[in-house]
Length: 229
Image (cartoon, rainbow, N blue to C red; front, top):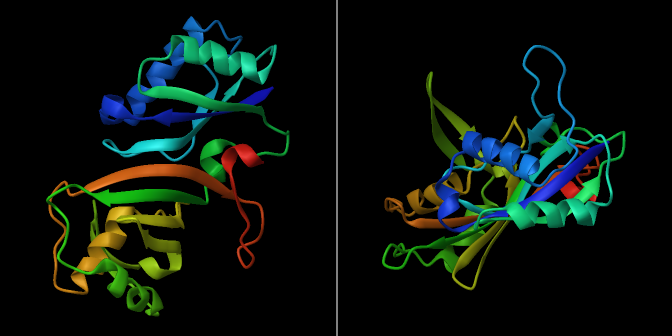
């Protein structure tokens, strides 16, 4: 059966990259003595897939991975076993059994929510609360994105589902699918550029709050957390 595991990543471990997080969980699952399923062939490996990789330096309250197991006592038992062996900065918050119809974590990602704050002393001069309504009212929010093949212009407006400025922090829900994949820093850079400001280096504290899948249609989007399927 397939399990979907939701976990937090915070503190110094936020500087560990995605591949190292994968290797970490492979070892944690063995230490927790979970009856994980392995692939067949010359070099068997744990059957595991992650949702959208988290950028280095970001914290998260809503990361997900799927694993296959041969047997299961209970989801609560898996959660407790993993947390008993986890290093500080990794905490499993939920485990569910996936229905047979559910896609894998990576293919299911449609959106992500973030909280973004400015580091003390690196705040812009812009009055964000006053500037945000006009910014969101624009028909297009163009942003020049650098890629390995050069630069291309994208329209951020299509991928901004919610954007608010509350208690000196941005709260946003954005497209995180493979086709869109909007980054919070892109939105903030575009907002500041509208008013002639440049985002200072290392100015943002970003927390991914959760990751969502769309159980509706493209025309009538219905987003639920990946552990809500």
